[in-house]
Amino acid sequence: MEELALHILDLAQNCIAAGASEIAITIIEDRAANRLTITVADDGRGMEPEMLQSVTDPFFTTRTTRRVGLGLPLLQAAAELCAGGLTIVSTVGRGTTVRVEFAHDHIDRAPLGSMADTLAAILAVNFEVEVVYRHEVDDRAFVFDSRELREICEGTMQHPKIILWLKEYIALQERLLGGEQ
Amino acid sequence: MKTVEDLRKLREEVRQMTKLREGEAEVRVVVGMGTCGIAAGARETLGALVQEIAEQGLLSVVVTQTGCLGLCEREPIVEVNAPDGRTLYARVTPERARRILRQHVQGGVAIEDWVIRN
Image (tube, rainbow over all chains, first blue to last red; front, side, top):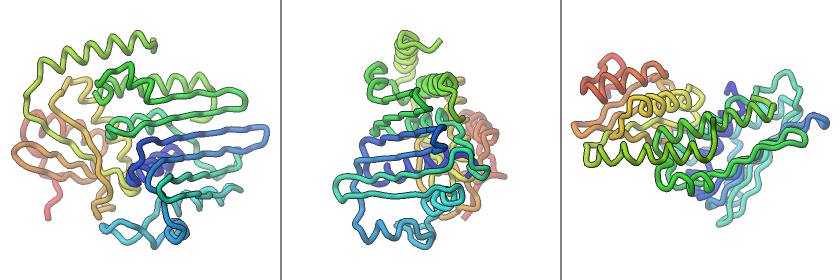
């Protein structure tokens, strides 16, 4: 994938498939330590240890429409290529957390890309999931909580006009934060 | 400007528009958002649909998502689910998505060249 934000969208799809009602997406750019860490945590149904062992195997998938599952293996390979790695912690009935780490300045690391587009895509088509997004760049942060916006929007949040507004709002905040885009 | 006040104003505007269109037949536009869809550009396709619907004020059109349909090499796939039937479209770029909305969803004429046949 050309952007890490697309991997994040793919991870969020896993959360939704796991029946999550809340997805916490955290991006930490620590430039002094040369690390970029992405965490996607959900409160979905979680996985048994046996399944957890197989999810980074490309020839394992729960779907029936094709026989390979490439999302997590692709991301793991991308991280390992950049002096990083991918870890998954999961508890049945509690949820799953995927954490992926990269060397910030690694030449092979894909750019973060548009988190505004990714968050807007999640919110546009998922009517019952809340997203808590936090993007830290050194000692600054941008935080977005869909519950606060849902309260302001009073039932209109799924409307394309509102989604478009949210996308522009997030894009603006991301630019002001001055981290990766 | 992007303030809470702006968002409240927009909310009221959306409510007024929605009231006027209540009861119109609904068309569902479904975007394939599996790993294969995302890697092929489904996020941009979805973004184009949302933008076009907002700008054209197509209030009876609802955008939703589905996972992998097993036709990964033809992603991004978009399904138009109208009262008169379902149509699957292959390789839907943002530009194609906008044309599908105008010609098929609004105009009622499917774009045969892009339709997936069984």
